Structures are given as C-alpha cells and as structure tokens.
Amino acid sequence: MASADAAIGIPADGRQRGLAGRDVPDVVRVLLNGAVFVLLWNHVWLKDLSDRSILSASEDGSLLTQVLFLAAGTAMALAIRRIGIRHLQPLMTRPLLLCAIWLGLTTLLSIEPSLSLRRLALFVIAAMLSAGVLIVARSPRQLALSFAGAALVIVLSSYLAVAFVPNLAIHSAFDVNSDPSHPGLWRGIFPQKNEAGAAMVILVIVGLYVATAANRFLGWAIVLLAAGFLLASGSKTAILLLPVILGVTGLCQMLTGGFARKLLLLGPVVGFSLISIGSVLVPPIQEAVGALLTDATFTGRSEIWQFAIDNILIRPWRGWGIGAFWMTERTMYAGSEEVTWVNTVDHAHNAYLDTALIGGLPFLVLTVVAFVFAPVRDLQRVAGGRLDAETMLFLRLWFLGLVSASFETVLWNGNNATCCMFMMAVFGLRLRTRYALAVG
Image 1 (cartoon, rainbow, N blue to C red):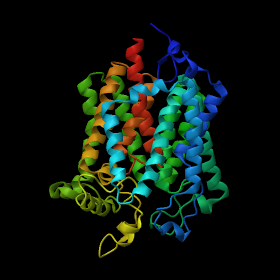
Image 2 (cartoon, helix red, strand yellow; image 1 turned 90 degrees about the horizontal axis):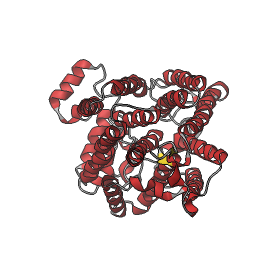
Image 3 (cartoon, helix red, strand yellow; image 1 turned 90 degrees about the vertical axis):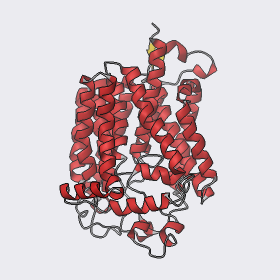
Image 4 (cartoon, rainbow, N blue to C red; image 1 turned 45 degrees about the vertical axis):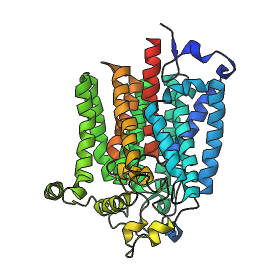
C-alpha cells in the first residue's frame, strides 16, 4: 500500500512528480491556511451597527471584502499550482459540475447580471479557498495547527473586543436594526450575534479536532472558550443545534450500517425542514408547531419564508440570480405596492429557499443531490465502519451546514463562515473517498 500525505490522504508519491509537485515550506502552508480560515470565518470586524447607512441597498459590495478575497485567492492559487492542481480533480463530479453550469447560466440570466457576476466571483474564490486548504495542509496535524491558530485569533479577539470596545462588540438599543431581545448579547468581532454564534459552533467542532489530531490541551481550551462565547451570544439556533450535531455524529461512530447512518443524518434535516418551511406551506403542520412552540413564527422567519416562496414562484425555473434578490433596490423599494420590514432583510433565513431564489427549482434539486445525497454516499465509502479524526471533522461540519440550512442561509454565500466550512467538508469527504480507494 502506498503511503499517504496531506490531510485528505493523497498518496505521498503522487505529490512529487513534475513541476507542479515542487514543495511548499511547512511554515508557509500553516500560515496560509491559518490566514484563510480567519478570512472565511469573519472578514468584517467590529461593525458599527448604529450607522444608518447599513440600511441602504448593498449592490456595490465591499471594497475591503473584494481586496481580501482577491489577495487570499491569488496566494492560494499559487500554492495549489505549486503543489499540483491535479489533486483537486476528484472534485469534478457530475453533480458538482451540473451545479456550476446551472449557477453560471442563471448568473448570465440574472435580473442584475453585473451584480451577480461579482457575487459569483466572490463565491468561486471562497470555494477555491475551501478546497485548497485541504491539499495545502501536508498532514492532519498541520491542518489542526492551522485551525488552532485561526481559532485562537477569532475567539480571543472576540473576548478582547467585548472587554475593550463593548459598543462595537455587544448589541445595544442603538443598533439601527435592534431587536428588543438583542441588547446585552455578545457579538464580539462579528457583525451580528447569530453570525458569532454560528462561528463559535464551528470553533467548538474545530477544537475537538485539534484535541484529537494535534494537542489535547489546546483543543479543549478552544472548545471551552468558544462554548462560553456561544452562550453569551444568545444565538438560539446555534445553541440548539450544537448538541444535536455532536449527538448525531457521535451516534454515527456506533451505527456503521449505511441505512442506519442515512436515517440518522437525513432524518433531522427532513424534520427541521418540515417544521420550518412546512409550517408555512402546510396548515396542519402550522397548527402543530403553534401548539408545541411558544413562537410559531420562529422570531418572524415565517413572514420572510412566505415572502421568499412568493418570489420563487415568480421565476421558478431560472431564479433571480446569485446575490441579485435581497438588499437590492428592486426588492427593498419596488418589490410590491406595500413595503414592509421583510423587504429589508438580507437573506431568507433558509438556505433551500435562497437556493431556489438564486437559480430556480432545478438548481435546488441539483444542490440537494450534490451537497446532501452525494456526501452521504462518500461518507460510507471512505469510512465504512470507522470514522477517523478527519472524517469526523468533515462529517460534523457538513451536518452543521445541513441542519442550519432550515433556519439560516448557509449555501452559495462566500461571505458566510458556515457555507465555507460546509463546502470544505463536502470537498474533504469527496477527496478522502477518492484517495482512500486509490491507496487501498
């Protein structure tokens, strides 16, 4: 059996052939991956939520975001070229290629083509970064060290922000989009407490991986720091989902059968989808949710979901284009005769609805095949009856994306930390499947 290299198990002798196989120093690998993780987790630090300009349409994009992603994308492209782009070839699967083609076509047919092209470029760079970190890391330990450094930067900076600039790190009544329940909740360096909560869930998962693959003390320190900040953020969705993620993926260690794992992993996804979108579309489900929950609107999300569904039905086959619906002049000011607060939100709070808004119902079907069903198949092929540290990392991050998708927009958004880690997990499972079969 050939020896394996990299965090996803590339055969070591396959990394050294030809010009593209020239080595990259370890320190460069660790620093590059660490910087990429910090960027993907949060690149808009200490946003002033009392600034009324954030209420205006955001069609121009952020210059800082564009510069940071272009710089990181260039550095990662150079590293991938030096290591060997051929190692990413297994990602050229039919479902992923069909998603890419459909996304490209609907971008050209977008109601705002120039805006959609910019958002597509950002997403493509984020996808490249999410895939590139997997082959830049020489080993699981190296990947874990990059994760650890980035996690400490994020979580310690968030605590320091709360201590020294609380007006920029804690929600207050002066926030222009202030919710009555938000003042006093921590957001740290993040733009909003839900983004902080989602990032802390990612850091808990990363910390568990670091504890297994690199250093137990360091890993558990990250877990405890992130968990503490998660509670202080008051992000209900993130707090609810973390034990579900850890519990379900932990059971996958014990249940090794393919059918049992599929039921265990996809059951909660179907369940969350039914109680969220089902509560809007199916009256009996709406009545059941109202009887069981004190807030059957999911903090106002049901109004947003209905608004999104109404607009999906306007363009059901090709959608509106990536980034061309929410926070645009058309939606905020001219979408209907009566403009409400729903017109001013920046996403549907449901990844599946936003996917249909981007590319229509066909794009939603392709996305489910590529990002839900295909990873389940890859998981069973690479893991069989066991889940090593890297596979468990990818499984937890993938499952986080799936269960979050019913309440937050975590797909096709290069600005979203969960989206980027979800893509990395899908790519990681695919690459581990390919190289595990090759080495075996």
